[in-house]
Image (cartoon, helix red, strand yellow):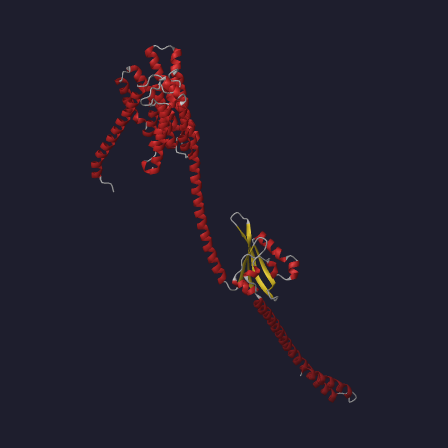
Length: 534
């Protein structure tokens, strides 16, 4: 439930805290850019410095904190220029170029990807590298060199050469600085373990030591001294040792350590150029700058791409293992459910005592056998499993192909009703009724057959006896009807005979005595007819 009073009391405090946080953030960002510009101005050539990090830092600030941070960048950079001798017009132009370049780069990056996925793949790293040089470094270098050329009256050819150096320096510095800031700022401290900190510290210390030994002015040693350079003519070759920590971090897919190692190594190399301890720095400063830029790009971009590739593969591997674990878990649950279903099915099947229930494979071989089937058929499971179910048919039916025909009907119609005589293990015949049903998976593929049979011998015998009893009853009823009919006919016939006999006696008394023999014959015949109906 919302409390209006609490909301009214808390809202000013919340707004004040948010304002204080923004103010502290602006002060920190402004201070950082003040120091960056001061460090850049302290290098030998402020216009064509060995590396120019403010643009990369501005790009990282926009990616992490949004476009609203621009006033802090403007205030810190411009105040540093003005305090350390920079002309207002030239300083304002350089700062404006830095802001516009960073804004353009941040806008393009936001169109392509989010900061958290900016270095996730080799393709995204390649896109970021393109943005660092075009348009970010192009815009920044045009403003910086253009303002300097206008202020100092530099001829176009010299301005073009200066622009190329500034463009390369600005793009290279952005490529080195921005990933380091973004990658480390996007990683929560809670996700770091003790070994992560120790490994990052070891990589940083090792790269700084390699850069120090290879390029930087050693304490107490004059790097411009001919005797020292003669004693150590290949000192700069030690810089190749930086490949060890870079490749290790890259092969581990640790982009944070790769970017930090590249930044620290390139910083030491830039220090060497500024102090004259970099190869060619004493003889040709421009060639030393180009060599520094080549070394910096080689030390930052390939390891970062390698780390992105390895990190992506590691992420895919983690996802693969996660999917594999999930599939294994689902498979175990499915198997457990199947086991439970199988046990319930077996309990159900074993509880059926009147039906032989068994499963056939696609070839018609017995795959399962319940106790009722053993009781009815006489075979144990060990004896019958694996054998063709045609063993139950009579030999003449097997020769005629009845078993296979029943399976074909079950495949065509999904169910085939069966009825007929079968053979038990002991060779006796018994009459069965039942069905054969096809078993299919979700895709319709045939898995086997379910055979359900019932011993109907007693029922068939009872049916036959019932039929015989009905036939006998019908015969008795027929005979009874015939007897009744015969009795009626005999009665009527006897009446006729009585009439004939009586009339014959009358004729004998009345007629001529010459006829007694004929009348006697009629009476004899009548008496014989009467004897037949008695």
